[in-house]
Amino acid sequence: MEGENEVKLHGMWASTYSKRVELALRVKGIPYEYIEEDLRNKSPLLLQYNSVYKKVPVLVHNGKPITESYIILEYIDETWQNGPRLLPQDPYQRAQIRFWASFIQQQLFGSFYKLISSNGEEQEKAVEEVFEKMNVLEKGMKELLPEGVPEVDGNNSGVLDILVTATFGPYKAHEEVFGLKVLDPEKYPLLFSWVQKLNEIPLVKGVLPPHDKLVALLQFIKQNDLKPSS
Amino acid sequence: MAEVKLHGTLLSPFVYRVIWALKLKGVPYEFVAEDLSNKSALLLKHNPVHKKIPVLVHGGKPVCESMVILEYIEETWPQNPLMPNNPHDRALARFWIKFAEDKGVAVWKMFRSTGQELQNTMKEALEMLQTVEEHGLGEKKFFNGDNIGLVDLAFGSIVYWLQVIEDIVGAKLFESHKFPRLHAWIETFKQVPVIEENLPNRDELLVALKLRREQLMASA
Image 1 (cartoon, rainbow over the protein chains, first blue to last red):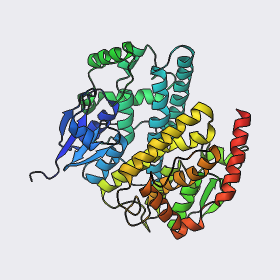
Image 2 (cartoon, rainbow over the protein chains, first blue to last red):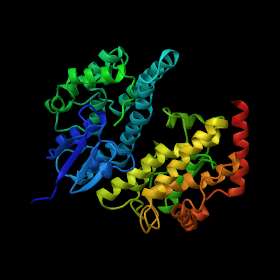
Image 3 (tube, each protein chain N blue to C red):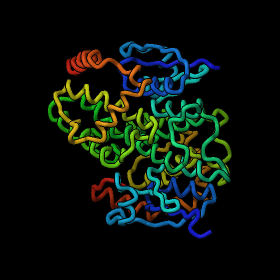
Image 4 (cartoon, chains in turn orange, cyan):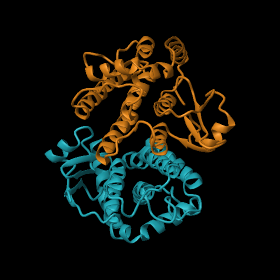
């Protein structure tokens, strides 16, 4: 029916948060219209839909906006109950996933941000912090997935797969620009092998930003000392 | 029913969020008092990542982070729902919960700072209040509508503690003429029977927090 289940996504091609939502929509098989936002010249619609933060991504479902990427993932899971579940049913397992989603967001991303926006001694400290947090994440995922990473394909991806893909999928571009190996296979074998598996999935290949284009953007941001923002 | 334990202290706004949720749902639990200067082996075992309170332990399984705990409580004990029914309103509630987590930090930073840093954190706290006043509450009685919900618990702890911390640091942020909606809301919040019966005594909290702040400043 016209207008029913109309889904639009306001996003940005290089934004890891935007990618999370694209991945989720595709895993669920939800048709959507994608609207690319120029973050230096945000559309009036975006500013209206996300009046508090003025950021991407924003999902607009039948005219109603939902903001904050992780919240959008839970919204998608609750609203489209056909297709693969992004989150398990069991409340304890859901709590575990929410805990780690929060860790990735607040702790890990916080450290990444410090890393790319600091210099000299401060940056060295930031590097140490990143490795520490990666360690914690690796350990946490080992406990959460005692049988190792399950075989993933586009049909059984869950929220953690999506977060890991969006965060680490483009790791080669990050390494090239920032000259730092964060996703080290020797230090973090589970995370590394997980990312390799995820990056093989056609659905993922179709969503993640093209390597060269991303490298060029990150170089530009780095050289102009800009801060990443959504 | 599996046993429920809550590890925490009675000074922590995060712990109170969990107490309120458990009481609103009528879930019996055992409170395990922690000494933060000497954390129990059990606490460190249950929360190895952050080593913080609150930790809810249900049937021996730990859940950490106050708002993660609150959603767990909501999903495990569905009676007296504290979240809206439909996905869009739930997404909106989660937005404000996240906002409370991300921006409410300013209040705790205020408590720990002096001088220029205090001025900066006060400004952040003020901005947070302004956003919530303007966008968060509308004309509703509670953030959750007609009935108290998780978003109210998230902000309730922030605002109640802010009112005490303001006195301690000598700030005047949360003025009623600037924040009429929030002022009406916090009074309504405090009068909900479960909340009223489970709020730390203001004077005792003031004394305890004052002491804690002095200790923090001395060791800085």
